[in-house]
Length: 322
Length: 162
Image (cartoon, rainbow over all chains, first blue to last red; front, side, top):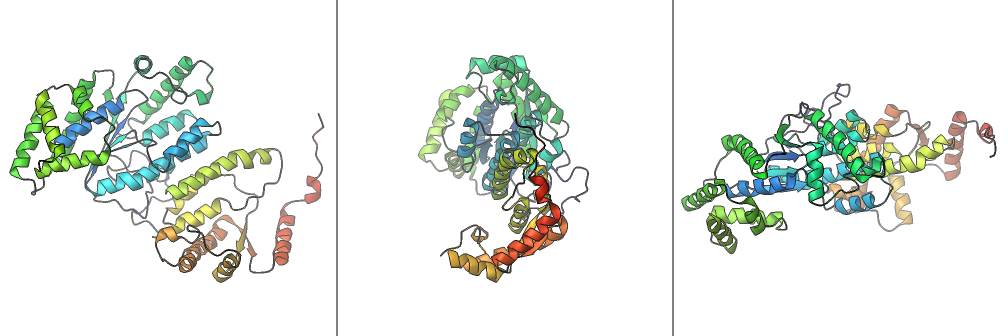
């Protein structure tokens, strides 16, 4: 308990043992959490990064369903979704007392909570963890706000280097169009706290441009797999699936307990999803409001070959669209 | 980790609103606990020592830090004389070392004290023997402070009234 068995980097190490590209996938970037050794956990951590409104959540939802149909246990985690911190962050954002340091630290606390309570247990149990944003969002946002980069990397030294980081890249012009067409510009996403001016449009453009530059500058450092997010939803999803399966399949092991019948059903279901079926329709069958544990149960019933109501509704929804 | 980070957030907030402005105004800031508390507590909870130090590198280094050292027995007696129960976290009950709060307190705070002893050398804390009476301690404190600040000079100001 007193010292890390993961042999932390020496204090005088130039990078100070912080988050940087040296992190091997599935291990802590820097000094890590000494009381939580994670070596050898079977789960996989996949991060989808990108600025506000770039289409991350849509892609994650589609990827999740596809993975689940193929028999993977999937858990999603997203920025500021920690039960401990979400209310606090909302309160803090709504008041005018947040400064750049407390802003960074609240996000880091949220991340630490999700890491300890969601991500690490899921990796231990062999889940595929899809992370909607990862520490790179924090690094980019704080970087734009002038927080010391090395301090930030040291701070996030307790983060786990994902097995894959997808970066959805977009240009500001396209982004503005998308955001305006959907939900409009929001105070924080426009960086209004940076006081670039009263005009939310100008502020959004300036802020997002800086953010995109920050993200781009991290590409090599953290081995981003950059995807052109200006393409259609389906094209991006195809590319995501191609890369994810190329990574997961060699490591894939279908447990022996899965009956032959369940296997066939799995494969049929997979075959159906690969066909260019309307993603959005399936999304409606399983709206995002379905909680993560129910989704996991759904997967398990398929594997066990039980004909529970979940399995039936799942099967029928795919067949009717095939 | 969340325990450590929440305290750091609180500290950052107080640093920027309550500590730095008075320092800029040339005032004396008395801090009841500082980052050293975090160094001792977090390390006891198994957080990486160097990581916590780097985390708090945004803190202002105090001109003078006093460490009131007290044996664990004295601290338990004093706390129990005032209240019926020890607080959950101050007794380190979250570590699950003992279901008995007093026993847990002894184990946990014992480790915290060990950490403090290391900090004394690392950061040059001035140790005050806190087992003595309030008056004795206060005299010690005044002696130490007097070496660092010329109180009389502080009363004059060069600023002109507007």
